[in-house]
Image (cartoon, rainbow, N blue to C red; front, top):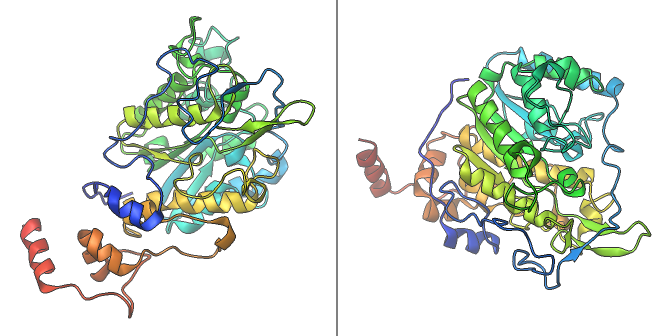
Length: 413
């Protein structure tokens, strides 16, 4: 794809507070990411869970949802894979590849999976969904001979990346998901424009260390959440040197014990290494440490109001997103490629905040043109000049002043 790249616009925090009423997630400058878990967590310390007023609960009797219940079967996935392959053959498409667990895999059978919904919002794009329910970012701790690629079978994130880049046999990794082989083979890694990576819930339930400094035991990077994410991204970067990476944090959830008793939410329930919100913060660490990598927040309410009092509208089982939840997250995710592809101003991604009570799945978000003019005059000028594919001036759009045009001409000169 012939990529149009413009200089990244520094996020104006005061503007975001005015428009959204909440703080931003990570911006393009990556200066605000909070680091967590450089030492072993104290199970009674809630300092890293700023959204919670209670103490951390270390849950030994934590009921684990079936993370494969809602994923599509191989037979129903076939049509979706075939459609993606056909689309990939049609001209110069924006190519998006998704890795993840059931949050990304769910809905594949009826076209309501997040990759499909994102592609519907990004013009001239194709989405390849390589997510598998129940999978982790990290390699299973019981697997030690991970450098023997001839016998590699794990479909963790690193294993999926190995299969995608050809380091290991796809048939070995995807023996239980043969239709995903077709999906993988529909795209050349060198042609990928955007990677979206979402893992964490299964790592949390499997009690995977956040990083190798998060435990008194000795763990290789590949057996830790942070280490596995960075290893997979590093390999993808070699295969796709022009791609951008978007890390989707684990989704906020609510937890019960095996007797059905409410324990708490993602801010207070710990697996011994940390809460799921700590895993979300660790994703922020990864995006800060990787070049051309950005954080998409699904935990801390910077983009939508998923919390205890709205969870039953977003979550089908306290953990998995409903179709409405997937549509909300897809709208937020789509702002990223749309900004980079000049489909809409980049300011849209930082100002769109969705309340489920007023959510319209068919709505196309538009920031007030007057606010855009005042806060992001360079993006406003592009809008007025018709540079964005999805957003054009209308009768309410302010006029571009002559002085602004002259200043822009001098800057470009």
